[in-house]
Length: 357
Picture 1 (tube, rainbow, N blue to C red):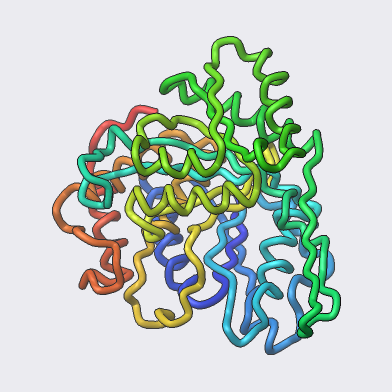
Picture 2 (picture 1 turned 120 degrees about the vertical axis):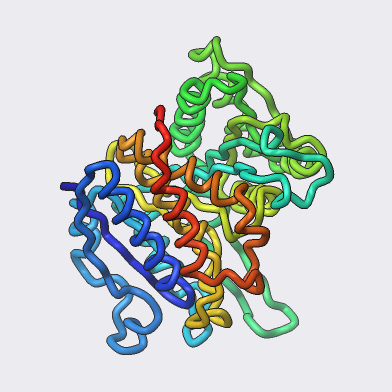
């Protein structure tokens, strides 16, 4: 039996995770799978009540899990970044070393796309984002803060190890997807000279993958092409900050944050899956938020755990739910409601269609 750590978190996190677990339970019944879930309270309420962010020893406990399902972290009652760095960062950058952030960008239905004349066949890509280095590691600070002479410094750290393992993962994924056998490197080496490390490593590792076409784009051009010609992209690999930004653009062209999920991966070890949207505290407790991103995170988790049939079945259910006419919007004013979205997915999940992984 697989054991899943569940961290509902803050704001709308508990609402979307409840729906995601509903779907996980149902697909487990259909597919004959067995999951045990262990819920952890980490987030704003727990911190304000106990002063505890991530207690000593919890990382070792999480290491024994098969996967982690996270709702959302962040609360206006707590200084920005305190919860996020301790909880999300503590898992990503700490001993669990989740060095890949995997973000699929898939358009399920044409009406979800704000781009003219773009259909599902035009938007189907995966971004591999390096997840443990770059500007997000927190080396820096302020001098003379709050004065006219204030200086703020933030250091970008890139290592050959960090860059190479992200690039190598992306080449292997390109081989597995076999959609176009093309991998695109996105960087800004023309302006940030040290990013030549990415360009050089990409070419060196790429020589080991002669079957994969190598492509390159600077981040500003890549953002333009994502809007103009999203069909050009299959698998792309990039750094932490640039990947964070461009994948939100990817979410926007594929339906918005209501459908976008991500995986924080350490291949072969416990990894974490989550919707990419924030905690949206203004919507918390209203039953209006779309849970499809959290449900998509379950789909990614099933795929990672090797449950191919279940992952394909859930992906097909999402496709039918989003193309069957019952859902026309993923916004909070859709009139469907949080549990209503899940009901639609569950209805299509029960469809007795043949599933081929």
